[in-house]
Amino acid sequence: MTDTSANIIKFPEDFLWGVSASHFQIEGYPTEVESRLSDWSRWTEEEGRILDGSNADRACEFHKRYLDDIELIGELNLKAYRTSLNWAALMPEAPGTAVSERQFAPLVVEYYRDLFSRLKEKGIKVFVTLFHFCLPDWLAEEGGWTSERIAEEFEVFAALARKHFGDLVDYWMTVNEPMAYIYQGYVAGNWPPGASHDYLGAFVTIRSMLAAHARAYHALKGGDEAVQVSFANHWRPFAPERKWSPL
Image (tube, rainbow, N blue to C red; front, top):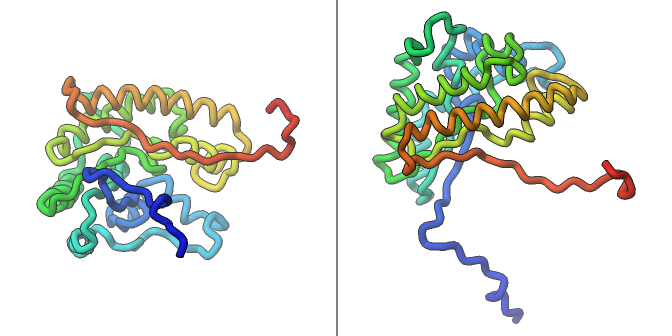
């Protein structure tokens, strides 16, 4: 028999095995999908955007079934769960108040606090992402990540997230897979905002995301260096069509 012991990968005892999702993929949160509060909920309405006409109006109904899912996570003996915050549901209208007076929607806060609390009760580490490809519609209409003030808006969002959930979150992520979002949204045109070969828009978005990450990083830290903040990177090798090309 072949000795395969040399090929066994051993993980450290404190390695966190877990599962993850994003809010739009699973929640089916009523106030967002019914009122089309996000760029993605509007995107799925546009003819020809989704091949079979599917939408996320129900998704997995996670907002109704999360207690069952938490039990399943526990049964699998997993110790980490990552999700994203529904920015559109938390801040459903274009802000018309001073930054210091901004608020999250109370019922949505209650939902997330219950979710995170129950995960913690099971000994599950909570990872929270602020932006996982989905923007409030009012911000998308202003240009989304190409808007001049999105970094400031993202900082406000981060500060409120820390205020309401900081006691329950173990690890924060500001942006999920920024380059995947930029490619699909500004080069391939497969995701909102649906731009094709808009390289200027792509570069502006990169700049905005870097600025937004920096501002959100400090807002989430709040002067406490023990708070863990990063972003979720996406790695993929690309083979050039023409190996001799300098590009």
